[in-house]
Image 1 (cartoon, one colour):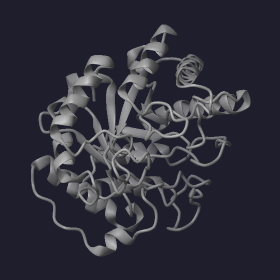
Image 2: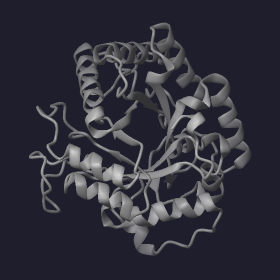
Image 3: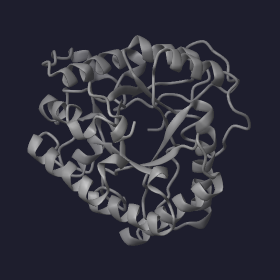
Image 4: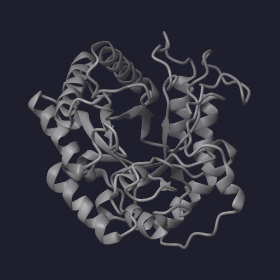
Length: 338
């Protein structure tokens, strides 16, 4: 949704769901857990090679999402993509993967392709910003425009090392550099990963800090371009530069800050997508329900101890199965990175 399409009842709430056990099954699962938006991988998130043909289940997937009023669809690009890096071969492969994700998006009914900003690899932030802008411009030019064309959505970084895009200032510089290369606002948007911002030192547990942060985004970039929020709590310390996602209200950000964010009138147009732990273990339902509670201003119930003993810090749901058919649970899933 754009700000003009913002719901008076609040933003769309969704989760990153796996497709490896069946695309249509994932669409029905979104409805079962009360999700009104969804994020998926269109292909293997840990491989350069892209599938030769679209999944055969795509039409049924789109029909199921439409029937359940689940939208928007967000594609999360492969983790290997690094738009900020200086290595020419790596940069070319990164653009090729992003191009493949953008070409796949209309088939999924996806409006957004979310991608990490990447690392400048010990060159400079400025050089990384210029490379990101050029990569976005070249990729969008290769894909072309059209009524079903997806928007590239750049996700803020947790910072540390050679990361680019951990501050509003750096994201605004990317937007400005891309605009100078002819990239229009309707093709380049931004994603706020709450846990990343927290790890980068933005105290999103404080409503006043949230208000100032969003005012800064509006002034430098425009909140209309903040189209996705990765709505994750964090088990990391603020400013730690660590990315450790946690259940909503179970981490260090807590329900006060998270509630202020999801109820913020300036973000009603955004899709709030959770990448919280244990999605495949039933905690997709738990966290979507907790997001709805936060939006309604209800206090969150304490989580059981078992919730904090799950392996992994986020959902890394599988891509569509190789044969594109509905398959049995546990088969044809993408590998999980450490």
